[in-house]
Length: 403
Image 1 (cartoon, rainbow, N blue to C red):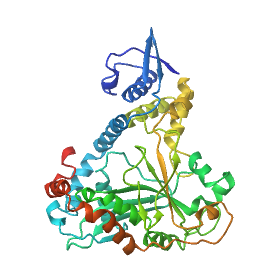
Image 2 (spheres, one colour; image 1 turned 60 degrees about the vertical axis):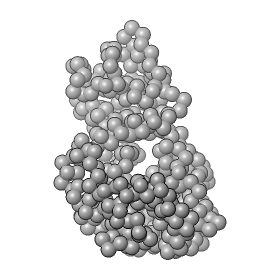
Image 3 (cartoon, rainbow, N blue to C red; image 1 turned 180 degrees about the vertical axis):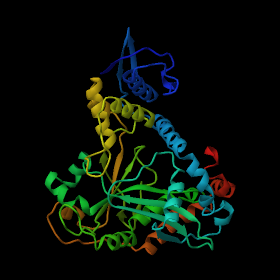
Image 4 (cartoon, rainbow, N blue to C red; image 1 turned 90 degrees about the horizontal axis):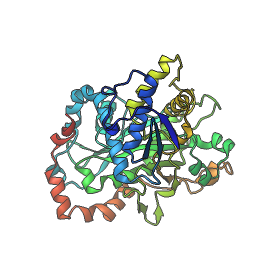
């Protein structure tokens, strides 16, 4: 049980920092934490001046989506001026639905290098319901375009980042102990953005991007970028990429499910996280936590080299200040399904340090695209419901609901 002594508010789920009638920063933080948890269907019991809270056994998908919508709206509110200034950039790179019906769809990989490319990637990322922040460390961003059309509209975007250091379920599946993980995690990456935007998402463009992720071309682009870079700690080159991890917030993913190339399963489900993290708490609550720590003269820094997840360290510090069990709060976040995209036949032996040789799989981009086209696209493009969805989409609809 998480027990916090605070004043009882009748409409807790609807409160904000602005309408809390409390002078104490401590009570404000406690109240915002409880509000976030109430939104997630935690059980609440009131006893005089004490509130006891316990989590649900599982989070329903609609509850997770509701919380993600809240977090997305927070991010949009903070970035609305930038979004308005860049919306024309997005819409000028998106197709109207009627323009792609005749396209055979020939994806072209564009690596983000210029400021305009990074701005386009950023504005397109606001389409999804899940909140997004950049990874620390190695990063590669891709814009996937349809070269079958003269204007080369965007199909979707992909981003790779340095993997999260410790995920017990992933590490156990690979067979990593602390030493072998420290030695070999650098040969993996996380795909932290992977999705299609309208109107290509109606044509299973998300599955197309999943095929592209496994291609020789993505691996070769990564290798070329990091070929001449030396790691700071171990002073070695690390341009070999043998596996990519992807997580799904809503459990089993329709995008990654049944993704095969010939007889090879491209996305292997390797487990699910225990739901240990901070995604279930709003940015508004974190801002209040920072204010309280600043008021107490306590600094929790957020820069490279400071250690794992800044928000989790912040919650632990707040737990110490307010006298509640931070582990209890942290371990009841959302569970994610973990998928692995193996890029080498012997990836497991390599990551376990049993061999220095890599037997890469051969997944040419052109063959992957043709396989997707025959397996998924050709069936989809003649579906009358899909045709209606595609033709009704206009690029001026993009992010129209938030502007």
